Image (cartoon, rainbow, N blue to C red; front, side):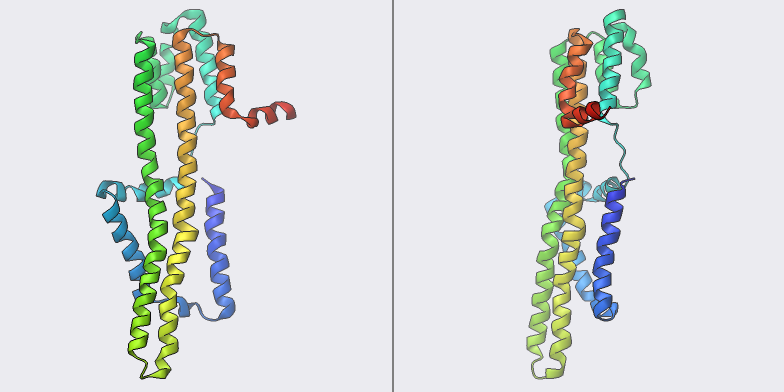
Length: 255
């Protein structure tokens, strides 16, 4: 569970609602037609912009923002080093048991090809294609939420324009101008809140998640190629630790 995302959403909504309540009733900001314009228009535009299958996948993708579990890269490196040591001492066939022990299908497939004696170049091609397809699939959710972040304010403005037109059409009744102007502004409010508190942050969060997954896949890719080529485990470890950046340095210094 991603605590920061939950805290961010709850606190963001709390600040908005708190500010509203300090200035009056929350019912002043509830308008069904405005909600329909912003939410309905944003969803409709997203369906036009993306295939239906991709659009429907955002509901499953949204769960990933709050419920996300990814194996730490240092654990992956340690696992690969152990496998490399085993392969160096007992040969490639000795790592066959690790295929069943891993829950990562990408690593399992790579190990299987290694045990089967597939050429290094062929392993590299297959793994890189798999990585590219995975990245493309992962990017869909982030791209859709990013687009929704741009659609929502636009439909908020459309709703405001509709409200202004209706207000101008009723100028013969001065008492109705104030309420109609307030309703016209609410749609812009809805669009801005949805875009800046939900859609854009969710897109950024998913982009970060996706980058972490691809980094793990790159670590596995380079590790498997090193194992297949029979490189020394220490050399492989040094190469893979580059992906950890300053994190490993900090850990070593504090340790």
